[in-house]
Image: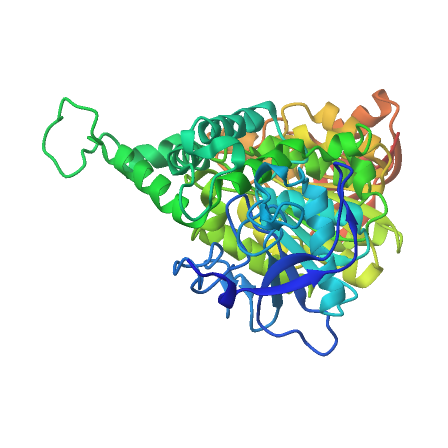
Length: 369
Length: 198
């Protein structure tokens, strides 16, 4: 697929020292925007995408031809109203939608970086994206937001730049990746690495990617984004286009067929090495440790007004972990609101049409603007 | 805004920091924020009411006064408000202690079970009282620990909690309660409003 022509990119000249010790410079950062930046430049919202998202937040993604990952939330008159706000989203570094990632050519070898790409962190991703403020000449954002890994980036952003956003809405996330989160990510990585096509990361992205491994990684991860109740209601034990069991290992059940489909469409748009790098960044995320065991220190100089949102059926980033963030914010005296939205749709709720969630985001953004 | 909230607002100094426990739809918080330049935070158990507060731009955390007061650091507020909810907790004594841990002062209001109409209901009808402030039936009331103005007065005395101000409200009229008129106020008032400190 030729992606370049639809992708806006800035080349970041300023060197960025990564947490791993390496320094990168002159690297590409792909972004997209929605709505208009006003004259006062006070209506910009930086949205951060999750593990498998990209900069195409809303409308039709020009590369995949599918709806943007946050089409329910972002658009004219929607929760994040692009008639009012200017929404910026960048592909994270380590990603595969135009920003600096393992698919890029390593000037030293003239081949794709593969796993010679430096290990990146959430902190690195945020520091890279901070360059967009300078690019758009925005002194202070109106808000930073995102769900899951996007929420982690929102937290890191405020920790790094306490006075650069008026508000922040971290959604369905955590301040510290749990053992369970790491375990699921490791399952995905091992699945990719077990695919003979992976070849220690030196596969050719266009010809022979480890698609089977990546598809299994996606299938496993997809289960963690849903809830037991949601799965049961949607699929139950329904059979896939048949009246009886096949007594074979075909996809007898609808849930099997669904997961296989999710796996198969994912490999068309995502790079296996990027999956390794981004899951690693999530696993390394521990804002508590960054602030020596006291999360409230991360926010103590901030005037940012926070709104934390969790979902009842999210067992990947459960309410209790979101509340830890609320407690830390309260401890540092930061203004914070919190709501747990009732939804059977699991962790994925933040991407879906969940009216109470969308209402909360809209009300918060508009009441504080 | 109802009279009870007006009285509470008068008890609070401008430019202070206030936690409203069980802040409901945020009416009082909004008033304090707009009219008295108060830095307000709220705690509310109902998701619908949290949503209303969010739409008013108020910093409200969904939570339960019984469990979630711990999340606020000690003495991080000048005042903690608890309006007509004390009786709904499993352990009101603990909640009062928690309030006085997070704030220098607490403002607690209670629907008075000693009000003559309440007493009369039980005495004459022989049924659990239903009044303006106590509108629910015995089988669906959220109230677990009803008390009277006198009970609360005695409680504070026994627990060595300082009562800075004790006010009685009846028919929109506010009067001071003291140890001399306590029995009378306990009979004639619908609501007690107390400003306390540890």
